[in-house]
Length: 150
Image (cartoon, rainbow, N blue to C red; front, side):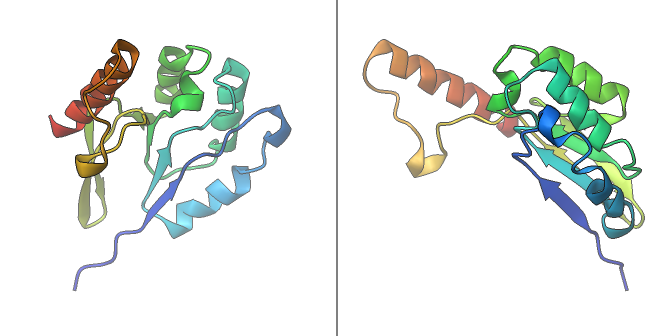
């Protein structure tokens, strides 16, 4: 009989100086309760370098694999390239149109990810119609969705 695979996922933690260390021990407990941690964007409050340092401090005791995507808050100050490097330096796999596969015991699990972006999917997607600014927004939405399709 195959063992269970345990996934822990969290998003919108919006770290800033006010919650330095707030999640550290909760995340540390995941070493016994989960096989992998998924960070689902909006890790920082305003996209500041100091806020990402708080995120990394909170992840310090996590020993299981971590995969992440960045959210719109993480892009706000245009530090997303720095964030990807900072997270990679501490072993976090950041996806932005890439895939990653992890072996966790008897299980192998794959992820595809891209930044969080508005726009919807399928019948609930924004239409490619209207004024130029709206259509630019639509094209960006489609580009992010296309990363996942590939």
